[in-house]
Length: 122
Image (cartoon, rainbow, N blue to C red; front, side, top):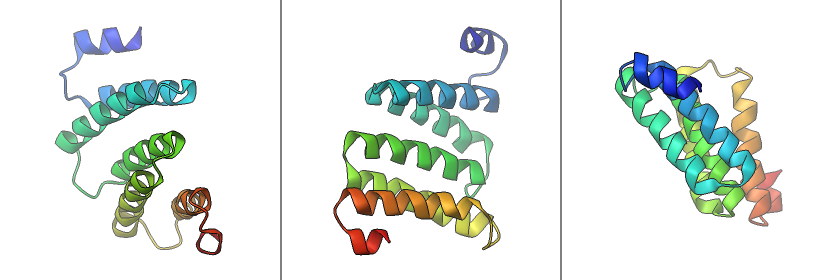
């Protein structure tokens, strides 16, 4: 397994481990095991906190992933909190016409829709 090899050969805060943890989190999210997904996404995020500057675009990915889990769990206010964190990082790190903003608007609109706020969702 990739994770076992990386754990043996890399320091515990190496960015490659963050990617692996995130990928494992995505698998658990897809399987509906949200507590495990959150655990792996949080491990990934903690490594990024050590390795990257605070407004690095990779943090937006972490926050989107965590928001997606909360959205899937039906915890829409928590999902919105993380989607908005992701959006704020993108505002600081990316040009205003960057296509990644479409992801933010879609995610936030999806949560608004799930909460029944259809006019805001539009």
